[in-house]
Image: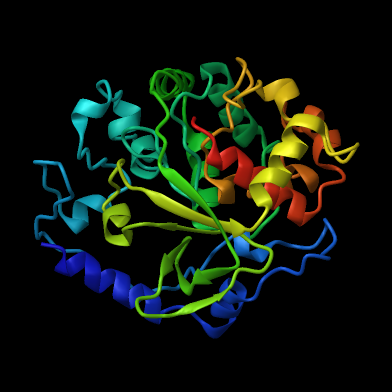
Length: 330
């Protein structure tokens, strides 16, 4: 039942270019200045090849549902493997509106869990979600890294969405409970990975390599994740000592390096409305946001208060903060 998807994943691996593999496997130097680009946080292989979509029913653990690869790749459709995990999706989340408003749940999943390539929306404040869409619309929220497909598609959706759709989506996602789906592991060495377009996956029998100064975040089961299963689990490998250093920065500011995160995001980093929670979130996503703020790409309403917070952060600081936040219960 998994043959089609496994074939697609295998072909993805073959499409990784030498330059992309170098990006994946070469750690960012610890001494890199804050303005240098943390390429490892922005995995992007736009020309990877996949097997043709077919109509063979696919399945995931603990679900009686079945969907085809063709359905799963349709951005105006949401494969709802576990409808018991969430309330009824509004139409904009389940189906979107052609031609430009893709179904929100297609990328962010039916239960708002998202993935390393985008944001988990479950439990974010409704007003915060609406403001982010407004910032995408106005151009105030941009991206400092490469214009990967999640970034480009999100901007197009925001610009094409109407007020009723935005309110419906924001109300739905804010009503959901965040899931603890990331295990943070401190290590000196990591399994060898490759880029499957916008996320990292393990290379079977690929051995190990030094982690260097980066985060390696990957689904436990890449096939299950590719099926857009909201119960997919992830492992985030981080350098040893990252969590403790991140906790110090988040709670004390690290002797003037930054403003303590707990000041605004709360003592448990679960957010204080309308400020979003950052506990248990994808560390890859968090690093991208810190870098985007530092480069003034995110210049919306959140940009001004975050500017002094990120100004002095090194990439090592960003890794540590993201590792600590991701290790917490959302």
